[in-house]
Length: 95
Length: 295
Image (cartoon, rainbow over all chains, first blue to last red; front, side):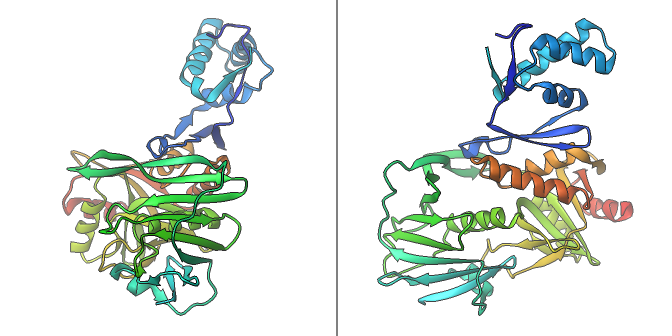
């Protein structure tokens, strides 16, 4: 369970490539059944993904999002926690 | 035969039976691909008998045997083929579900060395070293080595324009190929294609699947990601969405991040020069007129 102090890093079990302001994300798989899962991160998702670096905590991710998109804390917080929830398979929590 | 070469999608694959190895008997679907080129992209030495994997070899990828019944994939058994890694050596272990003999094989292959070894256990006096599923596996790893793309797609050429229609099972690849065939276009294939860059553009190639498959190729001008619809509709896709949609239809063994990154790079670069669009279509002649009008 993550909280504002949690620190995340990218899992090595995923390969990403930036295209414009978005990312394509392809999970590494060991079974043919999982082969064709490919994800696209939109601009906001790409911003959060890029700021997940194993050093910044969740609170800092929210603050960075608020500053970049001039949004309020509630919206930014919902966006970050929603992103972390959806992407938890491709993230490693450090604490 | 003791040796022969195949030219598939421009890849030269040479098979040689090792001392004591089986006679090599290519299936009918490969006869039109036999060539005299002796400078292969990969050389496969074929041995009779069993190769035990080295102790400590780790299975990195597993494919169950799946049959499609009325468009629905049904798992028939857990083990079909699998990829194993031991230090820098790679191995594919496979069964041959369509063979009338109880054969097994191990392919020792490499993503950097052009000489591979294939052990076939239960081959009898003669065997096809490209029998299903080895054909798809050998071709797939050649595309990995060359930075090319193996994709679930049908492809056609109409008036020197090459259109590729990609989708997984049930999306209408064969239907689309039949419609274009009726309209007089050249069908490259209705199920699986290899896409290769030739420096100035891209070409799509068929691979032998059916006994009457002639080697066939076409320049590639546009990619459609297809699905059935109530009306014909083209929705252009670009950027990350286009790359994602195409990647999802590529044949890929994503056990190694380097393999994933290579394919992702190839698809991304292709998407900068080949336009892509989603195509919802009605399965009749109207979709051909619609595409040609919109070109």
